[in-house]
Image (cartoon, rainbow, N blue to C red; front, side, top):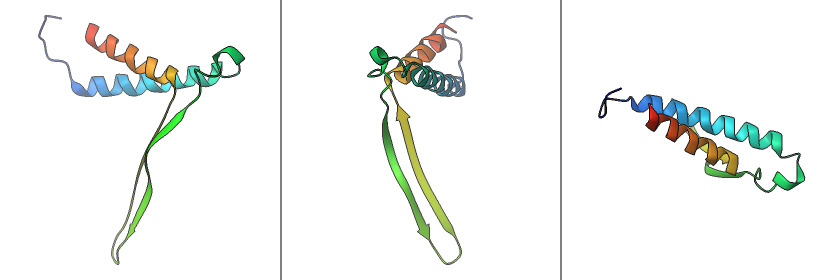
Length: 85
């Protein structure tokens, strides 16, 4: 591709999601190894599930991300792949 060509932001979002998922899966698989257990420890961040009850409508909102170091490495690798496209 030519330098400065258009890259879709949706492609970046998809690559980041896939990188995070694959990184987290690798972290879960390697968590059985005692030396790598600390790297696979996950933290959850986000907003807890909240429900708003109205007479006509019930709205439920919530967002939680569970991430470990391998997931972060997956995000970084996905971003680098996006930059190389």
